[in-house]
Each structure stands twice: as structure tokens, then as C-alpha cells.
Length: 139
Image (tube, rainbow, N blue to C red):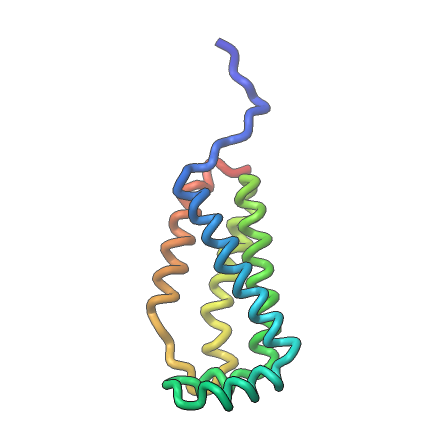
């Protein structure tokens, strides 16, 4: 029996599903953060006029343009990491993990009176843990 050394390692089905979810979530977030960053004043004016009665809207309104610009960059890095993980590259895991950690820290450091929520931390930790189980197969 001959072993094919050129054969690419296979991704687990779970990892494939998580990567697709990452493409969707980070892609939509990158797009929306870019949109808000490019038209920050107009978007904030509309949010203030239309959604002023919603609880917590004042936190969103206190986010400066830099929050959305940095968020766009971090979500873009997250997508790049997912693309590399799709190609079974370890570098992708590190890009994804780093960007996700910074995305958790970002609102804490840039939005006044931001209330930390454990749910995003748990979801991020679950994705990072799941991706890490595939690290041995990555090059």
C-alpha cells in the first residue's frame, strides 16, 4: 500500500461548519462596521432619531468612529484567518484567535460605560477551542 504524501489533511466536518459560520458572522460584521465607519455621523443621527427609546442605545451612540474602524480591521483579519484555516494553515488560527481577543477588548477600551457580557466571551472561547482541536492537522 502506497502512502500519498501530497495529500492535503482533511478538515473535520465540525470545523467546516464553524468556518462557514465565521465567514458569515465576521463578513457581515466587517461590512456593517465599514459602513458605520464610513458614514458615522449620519448613522448615529439616524440611530438617535429612530431608536432613541431602545434600552442601551446610548452605549451605541457613545461609540466613536475609531471603534467601528478598528472593528472593521479586526473582523477583516478574522476573515483572513478563517480563509487560511480553510486551507489548513496554522497561521489562520493565530490570526483568528488574536483578532477575536482584540474584538472582545475593543468595546471595553473605547466605549464609555460599556457593560461587559459573558456570552460573546463564551462563544469566542468555544470557537477558538474547536478550531484548536484541528491544529495538529494544519501546516
